[in-house]
Length: 185
Image (tube, rainbow, N blue to C red; front, side, top):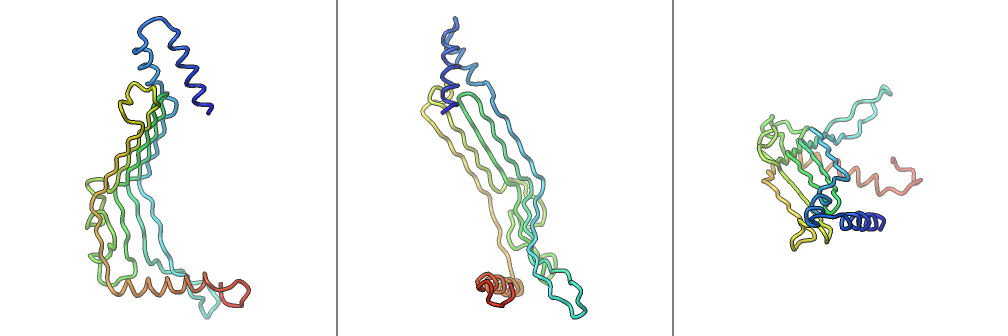
């Protein structure tokens, strides 16, 4: 590929310079090509039931059924001349039941902790490092992958299961209706 040709040319230039080749290669290995970082504090997605049309002809608002929250999302990538690394982490995952009537203690369906607050440790982390065969830091590895996941708590109640079942049934029924058959889409 073009990157391989570029790396070979740079290494040839380094090898032609006078001095300690090992020190030159180490300096070359630390040259940074790309340094990327993304941090998102909170992503929130709500599943909303389709509103019923009122008799007066006005539109009613839909009812929120569930809310999925991802807190503390990070992604990083670093590309050097002879090494590339990428990592991602998710601090907290929450799936909240917005239709139950038992109170706030029963709101959390899935969570990385039992409270509706950010977790103390990250729920999930992944790190990948890839080395070029000529990298002085490579050792015996070409690729290294590290992953970790913390506890995930589940909760629920029959009221919520019933509402989600009804919603899923309607969604699947509409999705399977043949186009042009006269049924509501």
